[in-house]
Amino acid sequence: MTRRLARYYERAVAPRRAPSSRAGAGALLRLARLFRRLSEEVAILGARKIVAETTARQPSIEEALTFAYEFDFGAFDVRIAPTQIRSEIEASSGG
Image 1 (tube, rainbow, N blue to C red):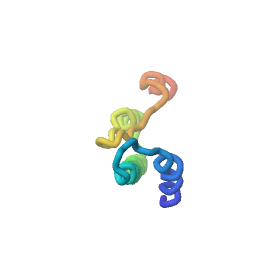
Image 2: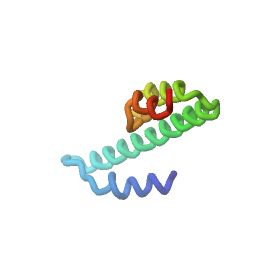
Image 3: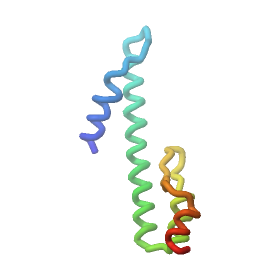
């Protein structure tokens, strides 16, 4: 995970410069972006755990669809986004 964050910082955070008359403002902005990215990584780990626990129970198709369409992990906008609408999935699975 540290390599991913270092690459993210090099590509996304470091090249951006905040327009400011104070030299430290740009560094604070980069630090804030890095902390935001870290918090997103932690949220993804939490969401991954919930998904693993749910799939380990081997839910029925209806339960899995309900879980997928209603899954929301707080303020971090971590969601499951099926590419089909519910009725299409149910029709193809025979449900």
